[in-house]
Amino acid sequence: AQSVTQLDSQVPVFEEAPVELRCNYSSSVSVYLFWYVQYPNQGLQLLLKYLSGSTLVKGINGFEAEFNKSQTSFHLRKPSVHISDTAEYFCAVLKGGYNKLIFGAGTRLAVHP
Amino acid sequence: ETGVTQSPTHLIKTRGQQVTLRCSSQSGHNTVSWYQQALGQGPQFIFQYYREEENGRGNFPPRFSGLQFPNYSSELNVNALELDDSALYLCASSFGQREETQYFGPGTRLLVL
Image (cartoon, rainbow over all chains, first blue to last red; front, side, top):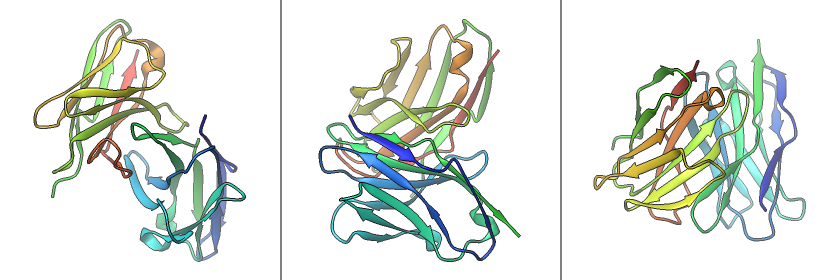
C-alpha cells in the first residue's frame, strides 16, 4: 500500500531564511507526487507536481522540489521565505487506477519576522 | 475559466441528521473526487465520480454517498450524522479517470453537534 510521511509537523523559520519541508513516500510502483498548500480557512492549492522527466520540479511562489527515487523522497524547498508563506503544506502521492490522492499529515510552516 | 466551487461554505447539523454538500467542477473537467479533512489531519479520500458513475471509494461507510450530474457537478450526501463527521469536506475536479492533477475547491466546513 502506498503511504506518505511528512517528517515534521511544524517548521518555524525566520523571514528570508531558506526552508525545506520533508516528505517520504512508500510505493512499489511508479508514482506521481504533489505538494499542495492550504492557507487558513481555505482549500488546497497546487504548488507543484512530479509526473516524470527531470527530478527537479519548479512550482509557484518560488518553491521547488526534488524527486529522489533511491531515497523515496520528495522534499520541498524555498531559498528565501516570506511571511505570506505561512500555511499548511501537504505532500501527496497519486494512487493509480482511479486517481486517488493519498496525503501526508501536513507540515505547518510558520514564518516569523 | 471558472475554478471549483463548493456550497455551502459552513454548515451546522445535529447528530442523526442528514446533509448534502455540493460541488461544481472546473470548466472542462469530467471527474470529481471528494475528500474529508478532519482538524489537524491530511485529507482522506471518500470517493470519485467519473461521467456520473462511482469510480473508486475509500474507507468510508455506506452512509456516505454521492451523485454526479450530466453537467459534471456533484453532491456528497451523509446520512445519520455522527460527531466524528465534523470536518472540512473538499471537492476536487480533474479531466479523465487517470488525469494526474486534481484542482480543489475551498471546501465546506461541517460541524456536527
